Structures are given as C-alpha cells and as structure tokens.
Length: 203
Image (cartoon, rainbow, N blue to C red; front, top):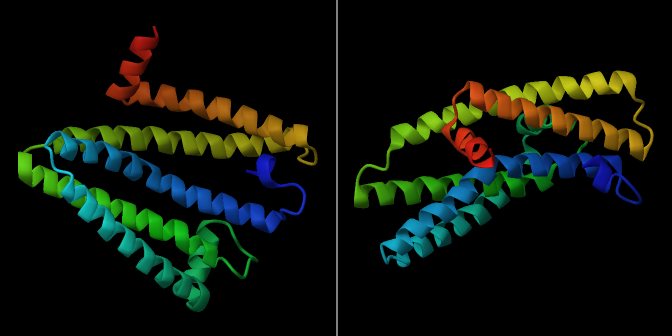
C-alpha cells in the first residue's frame, strides 16, 4: 500500500486509512467469492429469482449499515477507540470512511448465510462438515502466514532503513515471498485438500 499510494499529495494518513479499508474488504473477499459460486447453484436449479431477492436485501442492509457505522465511528468514542486500536489508526480523528468496508463485510456475510441456508433447505445436505473442516485448515494456515509476515517485516526493518522506494519495495518483496512459501508449507502440514490438489496438478 505504501508503495502504490504513499507519494505525491496522498498523505501518510490517507495511506493508513486506505490500507485499513483494504484490510476490512479482504475479510469479505471469501464471502463475496462464495456468493457467486452459490448463485450459480441456483442458476443450475433454474431459479434466478431467489438470488435477486437476496441481493436486493443485501444492498438495502449495506446502505443501512453504512449510515449506522458512519454515525457510530463518528459519535461513539468507545467504538472509535477500539477500531482505531485494532487497525492501528491512532492519532487519526476521522475514520468514518471505514463505515463502508465494514458495511460491505457484514452485508456480504449475511447474503452468503441466507443463500446457503435456503439452498440447503431446498436440496438437502451440502457437506457442511467438510466445508467447515476445510475452512479451519485454511484459517490455520493463514494465521501461521500472518504471524510469519509480521515478524518478517520487523526483521527486515532491522536491516533496511525505509526511507527510499527501493527499501520499501525490498521489504514488501521479501515479506511476500517468505509468507507465501510459509502458507503453502503450513497448508501441506495441515493437510489442506485444495492446496494438495493444486500442488499435484503443478507437478
């Protein structure tokens, strides 16, 4: 984020807010992707109405939550303090822009839950146990990757002074490569079927 935006009139405060927004959006990425997959299951059943109704409901919830979170982040000190601390946005007074990614995150999750629940009631077992088991393995691998990425950033900083573009790029490149390899290794250790399938096809 600092490489792409931290130049010109885009201030360090703007960069931090953008990075925080992207981080919140990232949590919704899996739900948004699964929504498209589940919607295709409805299309296979020749049902185009249910996804439309759920999507309209999701949009309305998104708009409502956006206004609600704008109010909460701007007027409730406790929520402002907690969000600022969690996303490392201390000393930034106005963080109301985060209301939009938070609203998108919640509404996308609610859409996925509604679509999955309706589909399961319609066609029966969707192998929920296997899905949860796979999600736990992926989550475990992701947590290991996050921990390694955090410490890799700190280690690289001890050897490189981040006052030039090349230094920041080097830190980002090293951290990306190391954390990516660690994720693959952790996924193999956790016996993730998806990663094993990808590796098998590559080999």
